[in-house]
Length: 92
Image (cartoon, rainbow, N blue to C red; front, side):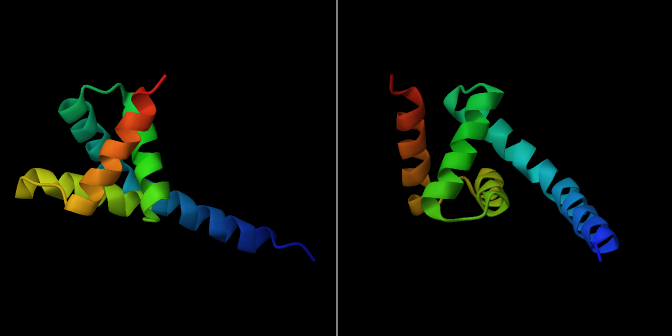
């Protein structure tokens, strides 16, 4: 017996979640692009790197970056991981 209906349900849930999280991820990319003069691809790379190196879900990293625009400061821990990701991105 295959899990056809179950697989479709999981896929539908994943698509729903992606649609919900996409706006904040796009906003965070925009913040990084503006703050650090990055291309969209480089901003995405920084987000992914920060997520992986801080062991934090990508959406949570994005939410924190976007929230920092309202609060005026990025959390010190996140700031150091962003700076490390930028250094890695810009190294030859």
